[in-house]
Length: 182
Image 1 (cartoon, rainbow, N blue to C red):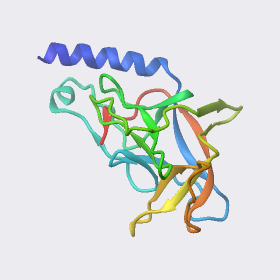
Image 2: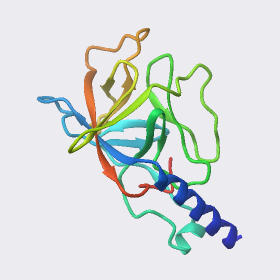
Image 3: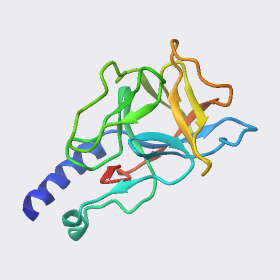
């Protein structure tokens, strides 16, 4: 079993490192979301807080777990994936009724019916890149802990006045930030 785990981990690491990896930061000057990192948890994206990761003990024993508390992403040429090492990866999608940006559970390709899986566009600039989706990104205050849920602006969705549009700037990463996001 350990040999199979090692082989699967190595293959997944190779596939993930071949894609452009980057972490995202929200930019909206003069607001509470300015320079908050984009993180992952509870199968959706949010600003602020801490990213939620998991790595199985069998992978930990062979040193296959990334040692980080960040969130990063791969792709952005239409589709987008989480920067996860888990075999099969974790895909990002937009929930169609509210624009909430979510990602698949590890080992599952299930995406809510009607969800949007394309339209993510990564552009690399001189010092940093940008990621866009839909008509832009929107952050909505989510919890008393200061996190903000991340949504894509969609033409058929009206967001509350408490939500703020933002730009997502990207900084390059060299490896996936998590075995899997939870």
